[in-house]
Amino acid sequence: MFPKTGNVLPSKEAKQAFTAMISQTLVEELGLTHQAVKTAIRWTGASERSVKHWLAGTHAPQGPHLLALMRHSDRILGTLLVAAGRQDVLLAVELSTLREKLVEVVNFIDHVAARDS
Image 1 (cartoon, rainbow, N blue to C red):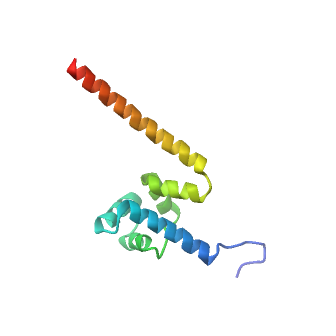
Image 2 (spheres, rainbow, N blue to C red):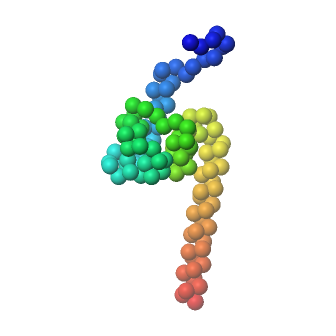
Image 3 (cartoon, rainbow, N blue to C red):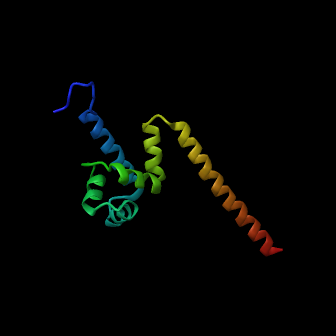
């Protein structure tokens, strides 16, 4: 029993919405194949059963598993940042990724130009 200290637990609807959001994002990125399950297991170290629950939308990853997903999946990170109202941080992450890709392209062009000279 909880003491009457004003603690408010998340509503059932909020938990279901969070679970659905994570499930949808994982399915969009990984799909529903056994390979998708293996990939999520590799990313998080979670059990096969847990990952299948995440993909099915019956449970959501918590704690270290959620952090591991955010570390490996730009989509999960982006979804959570948008859900938290932190689009500004998402923009910074996307700009950083774009900059890295542009540097790779410039390096490739320089390599090709040097080879052809």
